Amino acid sequence: MEFKHVEEVLKPEAVGQRVCIRGWIYRRAVVGRKAFVRVRDSTGVVQVVVDASKLGDSLVHELKDIGLEASVIACGVVKESERAPGGFEVDADHFVIVGYSRDFPIKGGEGVDYLLDNRHLWIRSPKYAKIFKIKHTVMKAGREFFISRGYWEVTPPIITASACEGGATLFPVDYFGTRAYLSQSAQLYLEALIYVLEKVFSLTPSFRAEKSRTRRHLAEYWHLEPEAAWFSMEDMMKEAEELVAYMVEKVLEERKSDLVDLGRDVEALKNALRTPYPRVKYDEAIEILQKKGLNVKWGDDLGADEERALTLEFDTPIFLTHFPKHIKSFYMKVDRSRPEVVLGFDLLAPEGYGEIIGGGEREDDYNMLLERMKEQGLNPDDYKWYLDLRRYGSVPHSGFGLGIERAVMWIAGLDHIREATPFPRFRERVYP
Ligand code: 4AD
Ligand code: MG
Image (cartoon, rainbow, N blue to C red; front, side):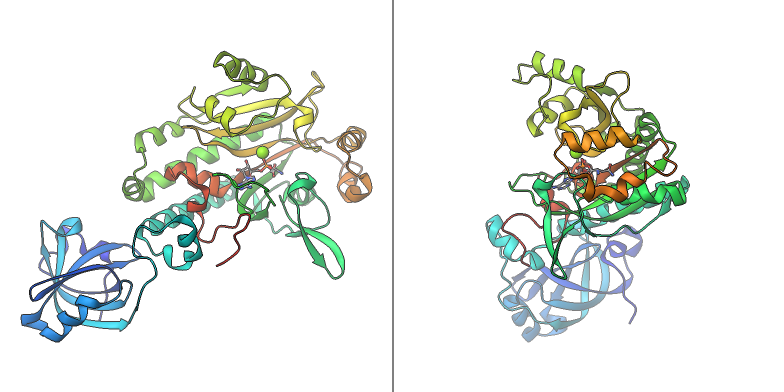
């Protein structure tokens, strides 16, 4: 038996052909002596008509009470059908139930916590196949982009001895009796690797023990991070905007129908193909926000509400740059012409989504870095190896980190980051 995927059956060319499909029962209804079974596979949903006059009353009777998500094999001739989803149906001449499904726990209308307890089953909902395929394309495009520009993919450690992004969100691990942490970012290790390979990137899980539950924070997320020797902040911003435009281009090319099915405004997304993106200095951002009536002053960290307000002023992603040094990490290079700010940038996604990338030029001077560590209350002994990079042939260098789920959330137009990952991790949620 040769099988076809549902997407190949939902086509005018398939009409009149006899096909076999296999999948799971998504919906079913029995009317008189006919069962209308909607079968789902990884590519879509198609209606299969089981007629008792051909396949017997006992099968139709069984289908009347069969549980959703039972697995089945069906063969038959493809016909046009106005009432079937997608416009085609399979008139079954062969139908086998492979795996029964009794009392499938998701019937429709359940609350989010219940659904998350059943996440292993909830992800069978057809929208997740579309989202996870978009995520696949985003990650593939990310890898392709860096490889095509001469970056080497490397494998930094996940278990680390010290913080990259501040102690507040570290996950401790018992490491053979001493304390270690799950990595928040590969950055510090990528910085060591540029002295070997010059341009490197990694795609790894990152961990943040975020105390609050928000729409855009996960405790575990996928992090795409490049780092390049000899690159200025502006050089790295060019990579960042071209990366994001490339990801959007690939998703539009390969997964446009998924975007449409998910309700994404595709025209709005296309604006992100227009590079370069506007560069907005932190100072200007504060002015814009004040004019809009938000209660912020120079020196404040910008949260989700401020980012949202800023993104609504533009229709493409925007860069925010030159932040006050005390709101940014110790490794960011102090602007030599304006020592109260650092050469850091964030890329904010439009339509209210906000930060998807954080990066910048790294402090490459030993003494300046040491001073910044002390300012931020870090113990330089914990970072001896990292300081060494400034002692032995230091070079100017820059990098950034893109949160894959943040990017997918924006590209697919999702309203919560948990939708962008199959088994979301956040406070009070580690099962299933
Ligand atoms: O801005 P962040 O904290 O920067 C860094 O970690 C740098 N060391 C990266 C680098 O320069 N190599 O994080 C980078 C990105 C954010 O812009 C966001 O997209 C994502 O990581 N991110 C999260 N995504 C989901 N859940 C969280 N809790 C996240 N925290 C950061
Ligand atoms: Mg950030």
